[in-house]
Image (tube, rainbow, N blue to C red; front, side):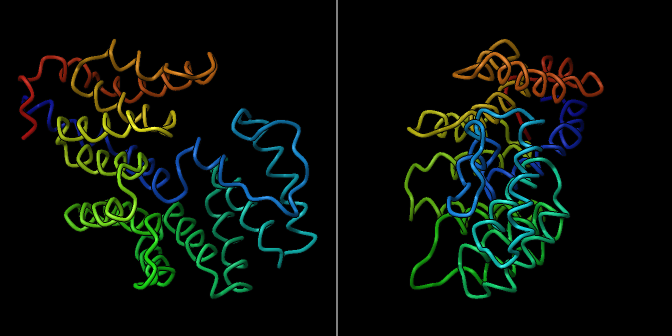
Length: 271
């Protein structure tokens, strides 16, 4: 890869750092939508995974009202914070999770969700401490291992991050979300070929969702294979979701004309 193209990569992947945390800590958009628990949640008009931004905002408002009626309700708090993160209201999600953690200080799931909210709000060192507190050596949780890896990547500690991902894979072999995070870790350090290898492996696993394929599309597109990247971004989605994915991909690859320079880059040398 040319020096000029390589120098543009930090700007291109800067936006993926937040996505990396979202993927690992809360699951990416598709995974987050599966995390809503039952209990005190109001009945929604349609499945969360098929909602657009307006409908998600309305769902957050509805579940928020349930939370306000009983702030000590664990499920209402978890689900409200999750929907707030999905709609980009990270500071408010953190405030909700602070209250839930106060009321449930020993609950591993609550502590894990609190760490996710801290990371999404940019409190990375605090998130590491919270996630570590949620983990137990005698019964380690692969999700928390992967979450810790994502925060470490955000802090620029890629070697430690990859160790956590591999520990997570020991607990959950071939888990697509872990493989995807590992691939994104290499993408953040501009090793695009290695990133693609892990992301393709993630996309090939049963249970891989559209977010994994979107990450793969980004890694492929950054190497100049734009038609292939768009084809990947459109897979197994509704027309609306596919167009949103392609629009995101194009915006990432069009920053300052970087995609043109990457297309001319030397064959595969990512150093």
